[in-house]
Image (cartoon, rainbow, N blue to C red):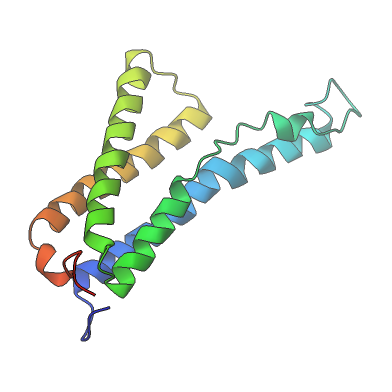
Length: 152
């Protein structure tokens, strides 16, 4: 951890990561689960009226993955100005950008503009823009604010 005040870009980046984490958790988990629960309570998801069951929650469209956890790790590493923050940030930025661009390639060949896909798409646009900007900062002006990987 570096002594001294945190650079503004680190504070802004960690804030943007908290926004991304919150938004992603809402889009991928909370909204689909609440929607499935509302269908179950209305009796629509388990085969008709009165059929309240777990089928609604099982098919709620939750997008299970560990990306939010990787974003939490990055936020913590950056906030502490840990020696691994730079390499982790660059690696995660490249990986996220590659994954999102690949998903966009397949999605935009035959876009399906449903409510759920629009939620997903807007989240991915934010993720892509964020990580491309972070990559620019980490490879350029922000590099000097983080310790080298070999230093303690």
